[in-house]
Image (cartoon, rainbow, N blue to C red):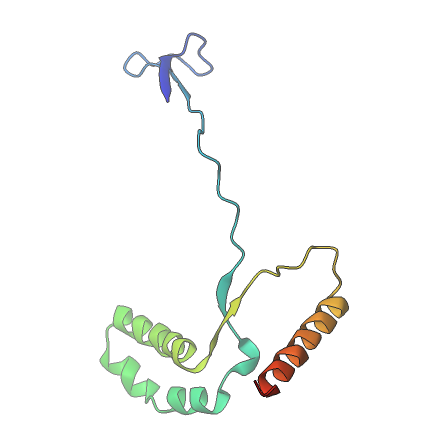
Amino acid sequence: MRVLSKQLNLSPLDPYHRTLSIKYIISTPVKQFDSNHEFRKSYKFRYGEINRYISSFNWKLTFSELYLNFSVYALYDAPHFTVLKYIPKSTFNESSFPPWVSKHMKDLILKNKRKEHIHSLNQVP
């Protein structure tokens, strides 16, 4: 990294702060974005348990006994807790297939691999 005094000022001159030119050359390759990530499966919500948990609160009493900030915390924490507890996590993994392979072809290949795996398990040595 090099820091130099800038000769050409693009902004009004400030007598207390000199204009600087910062040059930084990246010597290491930048990592590619990793698209593998975790997410919550919204279609696998356990609605009954979430409803029972939220309904177990006496909200009128809860809000009447707390200061405003604590009431907001309670109102936020209840749904947040239900998301963490009752909505399962899933992991998205990027496909190892080339981009030109269609979904139908991927499904056929994976189905065939599963059949081969089951067949190999059933073989008697």
